[in-house]
Length: 113
Image 1 (cartoon, one colour):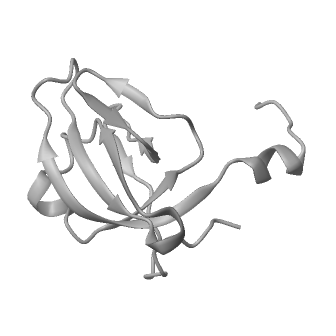
Image 2 (cartoon, one colour):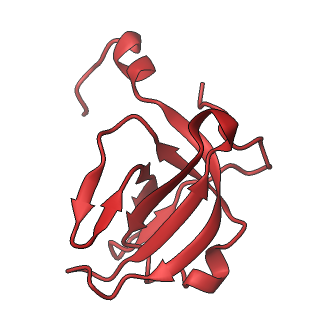
């Protein structure tokens, strides 16, 4: 059972759709990761993220993929890289991350309702 929150708490988390426009290996990370550059549309802009998604994805397979990200968390310094958004995903049965995404394209920057 999870803790109950008010709807107003959920509204404070700004989850947006964005398209990955660049993906690079991140060998400096302590855990295997990929550096992402995600276009969240004109209101939010292009943001960087680090994601531990190397089990199911390679940088080449990520370009053009639409993902979900939390855009109103403060940036985090991850080694030499500054992550500006939290890219969302779920653990599979082995603990590897599967990206959260939309099942049909939506405009970049659209907010989850």
